[in-house]
Image (cartoon, rainbow, N blue to C red; front, side, top):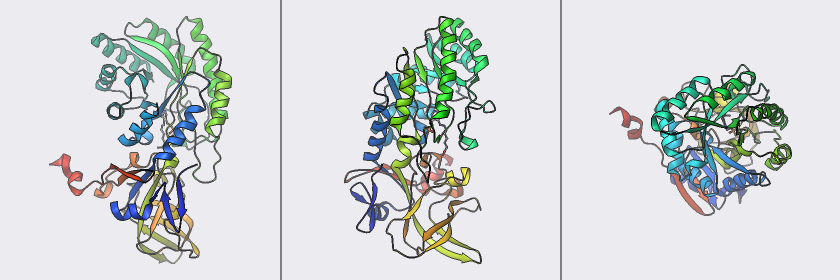
Length: 412
Ligand code: LLP
């Protein structure tokens, strides 16, 4: 459910016309809907209302400060993976005690920064990382709360680049070797093992892999209890999928019901790290048609957005629904929608039935709120797009369009 809809022949985001936004701010343009963001966060969070929990929005999906501020105001904690994300989360007003820090390669400076802020815990991914966190914390006279990220060897049945909980993936600690890690953590002076963590992948469209992982974690939890460890948190990561095309992911309510049924009575606080499911369908990327051209067996629509703006189609072969901002009712044709970048991999849509479009008309790419702007780059020296947050009739420039000066600012 979102707030992007056609009204009187043109696309609206809540109370604002996309054509007007594109004319005012130019294209390519990311546009997010506040009402959709709120709705998605609340639907997810209330799905776990019956048990003690903390929803830590995964900043990597969309790290715009205005988005973070909005989610923080709704009570969200945050899942971060870098010092930069920590900086953003704190700037957005997220209380440090609602922040969990994931990722395989935390640097000493980043560990220090997180301990200074007083985050809730580190999700630790290797023995060496544990020792490093212990060293840094001891130097600072602090004790760091830690969870280990357990790799449960479960197949999330998603794109190989975004499955993370298989034995062959770089993430987490092998479940069979993890008891040793907890024993070491118990014995080190400046770390306290307080939780179990896992994240098996992203864009999961069924609940079963989560349940399979959970079953394995609960067997493991019993072993930790037998070691007299005081485990208080269970972090199940993120990964719930969304509808891009014809997927039918479970509704958060169904997801919440399945998890709380298993976990409801245990003395554990559940932590969740949703990213895509909160922001994915709360954003679109608007682009203008520059040229159209026919070659003998292909038709191309060349637009002003490119793989540097939205890399998912090039990188994962992802599908993003595309529609005219102002539908003209022309017959459809089979086209590739491509950008101006000098690579054949620069496409936003391939072999798509799209109504014939003309120069100067605009297209909207849907489901662009997650891993859209955050994965954008300056490749081909293209200034990055502006980001707009709409709230009813109100328009907030969440990020100004980059300029040529901003492209070279760090080089002068
Ligand atoms: N927690 C951890 C430890 C993660 O690694 C991730 C995502 C999340 C939470 C959030 O997962 P989500 O709820 O958004 O599925 N760039 C890819 C997605 C990469 C996901 C990486 N980790 C894409 O565009 O599909």
